[in-house]
Image (cartoon, rainbow over all chains, first blue to last red):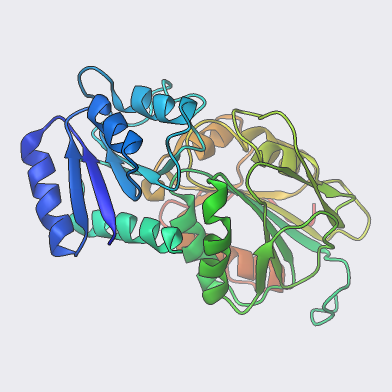
Length: 123
Length: 216
């Protein structure tokens, strides 16, 4: 099963995105910030990660940096799903972010991004 | 130029750099291209475990030969080489591929800058094109400047079609971009330039074509 992790501190947005992803036959897990994301990764998550940037405790860039430093990215691909364009605090993470979608976005664009990522994750 | 000779040295070389969001854009561009009388070498920042699947994705979409670059590969027309992750990929005398481990440049390995900066001005090279697509950071901007200084032609993906405009924007800021285009227009322009067709992608609203001449 193809599993998507939504990492976002906005429950309403995470819920709407989850509904669409399930409609498109993906399994969905959620985390409300980077700490939750790291926990999922340590538990062996593999799939596509939809990562917000502005979050409490660990923001999106800090989370990706932690995943990289702890070698936890494994065979997962990170896609940013955020209202913020890169602002310079992502230096060194250029090869860790597979794709990027700025809010507000069209759900067709989300579908295209996620399916493209899973197309490359095929065994 | 003999466009059918499979193993003659390419007189036209296209060097493409991409990062975040680049795999979809590359699939769109390569999927629109016929087998070109040129060799294309691509650096796409990505984890190694998707190298093979990305080659497969590109191969499905084009009649050209697409494969992961190997050390010593000779450049020839109709060939599309993808630099493997975690090795720097450069050209030797515009004729063959050098793969070597090395420190990250612009935080990445392979580096688009290193690939593009390895291109040389050389008798017999008719066409040198640099293409810089969506991505974070600044990798590729200095390489595009190098290609332009050699008399090559440079294309940057336009802001509206980029997932992240960082890399193309850095090249634009250096003043070394001949034209900014969306993916479909980039494909059309690459075909036109390499096949000698007269039409080009100036129909794109965002195009900023200068009087740059490939043969200069």
